[in-house]
Length: 155
Image (tube, rainbow, N blue to C red; front, side, top):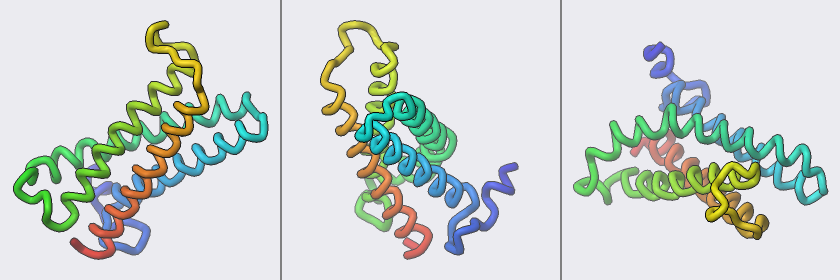
């Protein structure tokens, strides 16, 4: 299985199958977040409440299965010595924003489904959901930059 995941990717870059698949799945989760946002704007709350948790689960699964391990194995050993070399700096920034967005997004979904303790509950859904969406957008954009730098630019 590991040989398959580390085989040449399918997007025509220097990336592995694992990297290409994670990029596609993260972009799919971003599309789902955007569709869910549009559903809410158009008062399709029931569908919104189905799509958003699915997007959070997909995103969190890719982060847990692919990105955390890669970060720990490849990037973490180079910090702080290589922080300003190649893709290290942008990957660290992406990792920090990505970690915040995943944790915050999971919290928002749990809160929306009343699965957090009363003291952690908030009422201003628009602020929290918009903040979560913006963090996901930023993290996804930085992830695309990391992919391009590492696998297209060859850094």
